[in-house]
Amino acid sequence: MKKKLMIIGANWEKVPLIQKAKKLGHFVFVTDESKFAEGFKYADKFQVINPRDLKKLLDVAKKYKPNGITADQCDYSHFAAVYIAKNLGLSNDGLTGAQLTTNKLWMREACLKDHILQPRFLSAKNFQDVEIACELIGLPIILKPTDNRGSIGVNIVRRKNQLRKSFLDTMANSHSRNVIVEAFIEGTHITVDGAFDQKGDHHNLAVASKKNMKGAKPVITDVLYPANINKNLEENIKKINLRVVNALHLRSGLTHAEYILDNKGRCFLVEMANRGGGVLTSSVIIKNYTGIDLSELIIKNALKEKFIFKTLNKKTKIILKFLKFKSGKVKKISGLNEIKNIKNILFFKLLFEENYVLSQPKSGAERHGFTIIKYNNKVQLRETLKKIKSKLKLKYK
Image 1 (spheres, one colour):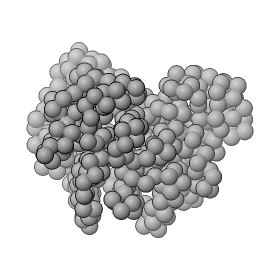
Image 2 (cartoon, one colour; image 1 turned 30 degrees about the vertical axis):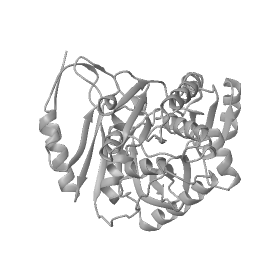
Image 3 (spheres, one colour; image 1 turned 90 degrees about the horizontal axis):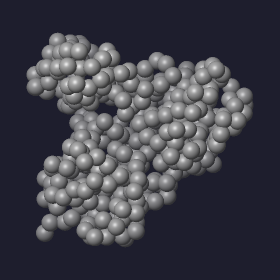
Image 4 (cartoon, helix red, strand yellow; image 1 turned 45 degrees about the vertical axis):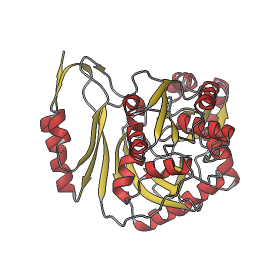
């Protein structure tokens, strides 16, 4: 008998989740804020709804009576899925965890109680609060919206004359109009992806290291699996990750955490999410890196079906590399089909089309594109990147 599954979010990141649900034989109803969402064409039914419109989503869910609700790779969608499932008495990852992982201030305060090492932080409602925080913490600082996603509105401030402009940008991108002021920590950026099995045990699945663009906007350029750090540091990060999971009362689903390792080897929590990492981290990277299909896991969790949690000891190397091109209006794009046929490319996507005006990215949401490459050694990786560069051609107006 077909089960009805409601999936919140249907952009290109959610396509693997929607396709997996269809492959498992379910009737799939999806929602997305965009009427052009790529995932709509793979679903049985769809509706345009903003993931932050909880009342409308709940009304629609009551109408269609799904057997389960799920979401992935988006804080708004995950919170909505938990909230609606909780209202309807369906399986969910837990409302407390969803609240704490979608509000940076609440997250910081909860982890502070459990003595998790974090950057010094203060909450700010106005510019005067930011000035006081800046004096107490000392430059450089980083300003963050309390409740946004994808590094939108995040600003590094190194000089006082940058403070007002940065504050106004951060405030404009904070839904609650509240800002977090944090000490800026120099170091290696780390991500940890994990998941709970159906017994309630948490597993650290992948530790990766990241490279960021230089400048006031900390936009990621590369994510490397496994992390380019020594094993002792990696084991310490895994222990800290479990402490953070417990401090935030997470009990089910996926986890995606970010940390910074400073030059003394200290591990500072940046943030933790109770959903899979974006840009196909949960659905493509972790599946190829560990052998665990996290899309299938969260579908079966939502529908209360059994999932066998078994990791494969693969020695795969994977890079998530973000692409950046010169600014200007793109007249023509060629070479995409040839690139997608390169053997060790797991995924390749440009986040723009012809006649689009490219500008330099100021947040994760403005990146130009990305590729996910599986490789055995640096020589193979360099050769693959050379092939991409030789085949992909952009013509500008």
